[in-house]
Length: 144
Image (tube, rainbow, N blue to C red; front, side, top):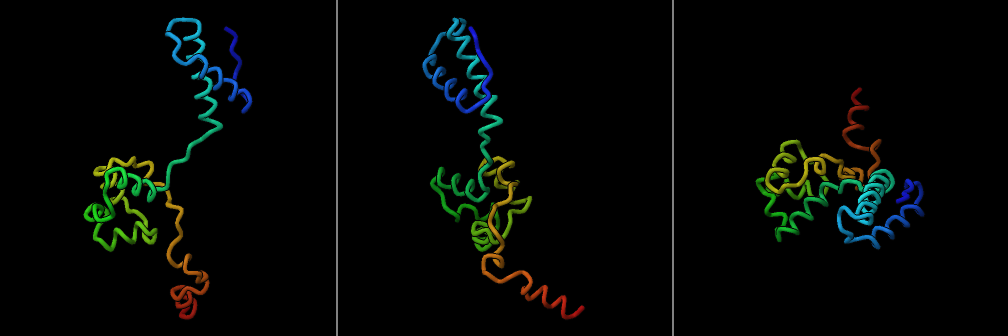
């Protein structure tokens, strides 16, 4: 049984094709051993070259709600009031540590997913108002 390391996408494709051909081989046989070695090599290669990023926290919450046949109303009490739920789910307000804990506990969404940045910008940034023209910043510079 001669097996080579997987170093390129071409090697990866060949290994996947061979795994497909060997799929279902009995354990303890030459083909079964070859299948075990190839799957281990492919997993190691994919862990480095085909990284799967964690989903956006808000997308993960939406997905879990969809799986449960629920809507945003079911988040009231977990995230907070109805208004707070909509602020968070629009991306206007970040998830707090307490919200993350409750979402993890009640909806079984991994905390590692929930602590990721949402990738959504604050409301002011989406409104097109430059940060330098922000009334709060302007007030600070005028009074200083």
